[in-house]
Image (cartoon, rainbow, N blue to C red; front, side, top):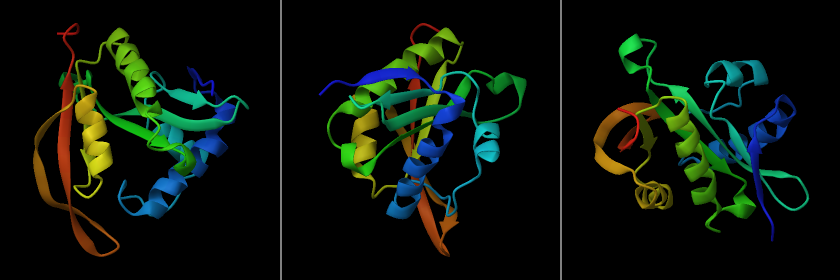
Length: 164
């Protein structure tokens, strides 16, 4: 199969939110419980470093984007990674292609640290991030509630070797 990475376009929002809903429904990838509207989703992410992966039918099957971790100037080069795939395309090794593209793009935009907060039970995502240069910083215990239950997250980060 052939896959193509391209920049995310405004017309991709409906499909991106469909894939995000699959993540919400899984119960192991996000604290979110409802799909935001396109405007709210867009406001939560940087305008740069947004990528999608398409299959041979030009259908978006995965996406990645970066969220600010703080509005403070000193953290302008630190971002949180969001990367999601359609359930039918998970586990095929495609995430590394998309994440590597985003890492390169993030460095071109001056980001020196990328971080991810992952539920401990999402072992596949933790391994995927580690395989792509992220290290485990620690576990943030009972950091938030999902459906009334306290959840931990594993904090992983990747420091750029080119942006200092």
